[in-house]
Image (cartoon, rainbow, N blue to C red; front, side, top):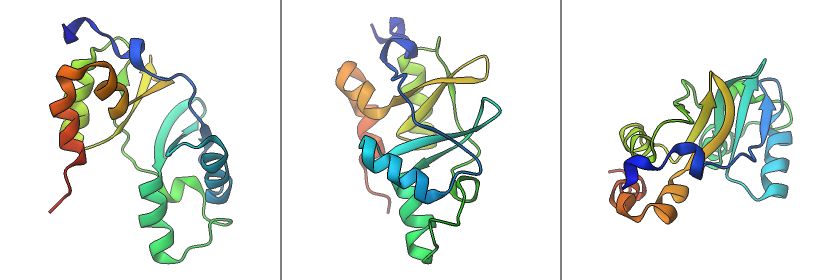
Length: 140
């Protein structure tokens, strides 16, 4: 049963984290070297936003902005949707579907402790695959 699988059982704890003032160039370099499609942004230990490849394309490249001068805070997605590590994977899938997000930051008492992605759910909880497929449908 999916209701018994907790977010903390599937989440990744290896999350790249940057400060609000980090430049987009620093972030892109890390994303490339670590081969990841997102990074988290936090201030004083509190998650403040997420930056995905999509954010960089839409908010930087299409506007011709210089990544060496634009800071994370200027392009991250906020408000940030998060989930507590003790929530069920089923709850996480519903939240991801509702907000149409593929990356769900995981918290413990408000502090970032990991990341759960749609792929974590799709590969580990096949009965939730229909909910994750919704995230891949092209928008009209």
